Length: 105
Picture: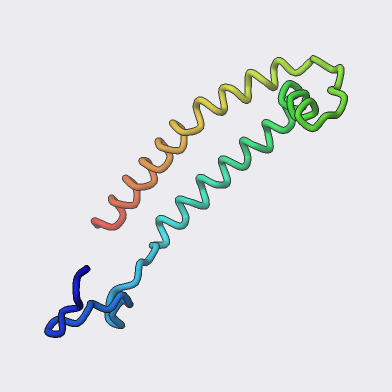
């Protein structure tokens, strides 16, 4: 066993009162809101695709619907899922480049 050192008291684990607190900028919070909105829009659209409705009905234990005419909606959803990150990145890049040009002049 080790003994407590009487010369050097143990360090306090409480943060000092003048330590900077973590902050989130408005740009980061707006980016998070934008990503969340696009993600939730994709989930909403996915809930309307017939094959996804069938899977949810099977997971819930209900009888799945017999309608199987949602191939166009399914293709659109898959294309939206694959292209939405690229579209978001392109939009943010365009907005940031325009913002940088505006703030430089």
